[in-house]
Length: 444
Image (cartoon, rainbow, N blue to C red; front, side, top):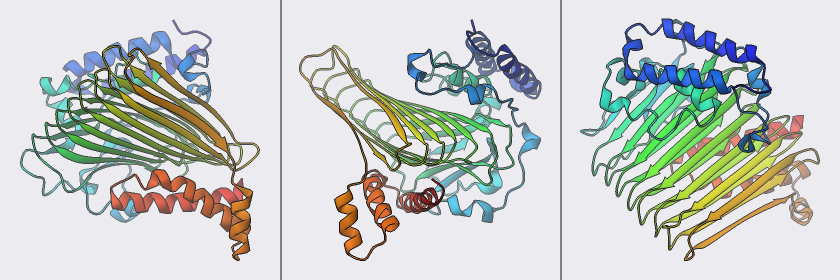
């Protein structure tokens, strides 16, 4: 039952679902649509999460709940040129481009794929009713997890479907470029499925960017399956409109002897919630979760992470950093579970925050829940400001005060930025971070 919420907000979403449902035509007979219907029914009963929910107590999503959104249908995608998206393109990549959540083949590049590699838009799978593939949608992310996963499932229509067969190493990253353009008032719900076959190697990049300052909601879900012996790097760069809401959920399942690196960079949006869950389901696997958030003005950036050590002899490393200026707020909630059977676990979690103004705040909550006795687990959180002595040293070398502060701030960020192994993306992130530091200094 929806508690302490505007029922009209929930009913408006349900009405929008019925409008969306009418546009599906033959798709409404698929197993996926049955899943959609169950998800919207669940949302109608529970609504959006509230601050009474422990997982959301630092993040009030009422600004989202009070906004009336519409879902873009096929005719809603505006025309965009290659030149307009060029600043965000990774030239040496396999690329699927989406505009307002809908795949645009003319702006995509999937040529030269190795034999057996599948990179296509999710809608093709759903329309063709490929039942075995459909089962992947929702295998890791339960629509009952919260109101946002329910919404994504209810309105799932497009996104990326990626499969890398056994033993294949991709020498180019796969870039999923999500563009918001003329998206005011829209609800965008991309869904991505990534399957790294046994002993495969791949890098996936998700970019969420805006071409103007519209107010909209991106509510994205990504499910990543890492099979035995596979190595996957998953990079997510978010630079939405300064008026946009961004909620993303990523769940990763690792099999035996796998390696996973996750890098999450949050730069845009007015209210941002990023949730990453990694489950190590077999022995001798390693997970590394890195994150960088840069908040200015009145931004709220919330990072929730979970690393679930379900089996023994696994390793995890986590480094999440935030830089907060102006009146911005940050949230970090990092959980590490070590199950009873997960002996010989080695897990380390670090959260560091740099506050650049007296009005910026952070709520940090690192958590360890350990049910095994032969483990090495550490966690820690630090909050601080720039070192005045370091600023003075740089100024004594002829560097201005603002520039000295920017140099030290970027040095703090660089520890995470340098962990992005896709060269083009790393260079792009460096440029965007420098730009935002400069802009934030002017307006904060």
